[in-house]
Length: 390
Image (cartoon, rainbow, N blue to C red):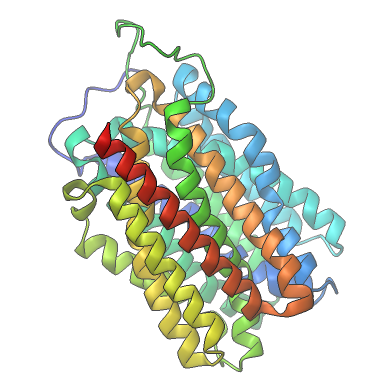
């Protein structure tokens, strides 16, 4: 099936179906964001280092497979990867309900990485297919509402399920949401454009790595290392500082991002992408620094609000910059290349910062994440200056 070329209209049936499917998938992810660290350090009997490793190890398989998923999405279409990725995620989440040791959980998290590679790459490629080019930043902002609503709603849902029925019910509930995401993906249909008549670009579209996206992806990587560390240890930190509802900080984080993405949806299309990305990294670093220094519920919530404002602009800015380097036949490869940064960031963040959190404490890990975000802002700013000179 060949999709019609995108028009000025943004909110089509396919675009809305994609957003709702993302919401179901990332609500399942949000449940695991809260439940996994508590499960690993509780019934499984591991520590912060083990929790960080279990949280981030899924990115190993995702990192290897994302570029190939991008190529498959360009050749075979987006829909098979959307449906297959969601079903694999459901299997991984359901099986964790039966796991009672760290090794088994790690294996199932590697399976979750396979799902993430397929679903995420195909989703971003489909988004680029459906969005009018001049409204891509706006489309990224609206589409990401599913992700951040999932992060906002998933942790409280996971906390309620654990308290009411136990960890097994929480994992099975997350699996059911992933199955729902697969069913909703069928409403999207195939979005891949017919590129047979497109002139061959200078860079072969058969490459699984889109090289012009690599420098920009480094800036994206630093934001995700910082965010990944925060997501992995936020629940544990909230418990340690005496917050009554450990999922509240994650709810506030997701809620602020959602509000900002709606209120400022068109900003990424009106400002230079790289400059906006650099500024967003600075705000993320400031929020994490506040969380690290003010170790109290009020400090956590205020820092989360600041950091979430930065996150609201970082992903749309970086992905808009990345997609601006690709034509229609390269969108899957560009999405796959940028997604490698997602895997490295969401893997290196929890695992690397977990090595700091174990011996030194979680606040020190958050402080290190803030430094990484500031460094990424400097790098991205240098890219913006090079682009202006060029």
